[in-house]
Image (cartoon, rainbow, N blue to C red):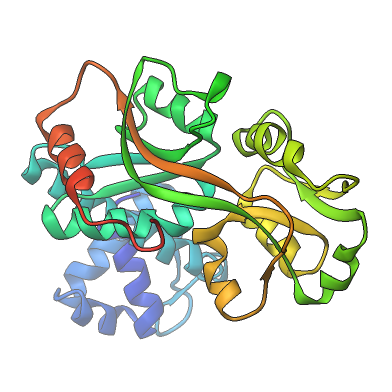
Length: 298
């Protein structure tokens, strides 16, 4: 399916006739009629009802209008991206970002890079381990993720190079309606799976520092910080979330920090494979590393 074919079909849908569609497509009516017949021949199906005057689109084709418009937009974006990629001599730069970072920090990265160089920036989202796998597979040029100075087996392997972008905090927050219930020793909590990065940070740095006698009662478990934030807003339980993610909710009093429960500092780092990089990757590495602190980080 060619872009011109889709635009010809949409022109008939938009104008209601072959004659007006021909004017819109800057063709004579005979030339446009030959062209749409050619489309039907190539596809092997009839698209128009010629038993009626004026000729109209068949109902089955009309029902596919949303898909045709979406496909037209996607093909135009592809043309644009290919043009920029060829003109810039590359495919742009690809980032794999931890879920919360995609929502909070990646907009700053994209704005900074697109302002400094006319190349597309592709952002993919995943948990920390998935981001590192995208680096190893070549699907991403850089990852941006949380790191924990408490280290241990959570430290990044030597195969990766890192550059700090700032620090964040993993803070306990809850909906105002839940605060009274948190005065008990048993606290409803939204937890992370033990096999994901923030779950391991919680196990090593949060749980051992809970006040004596405090017990967390898991009410929901998710690896996705954005989902945990929504659960906290709904009053399901206390969630330990990045301060950069919940700051707008704290400022609007939709969430409150829970006093007496521990928080933990996290580093935000840009990561690349050690030992090899292109000129473009070096430029991005230097540009982000030397930039002023990202808003929301300290």
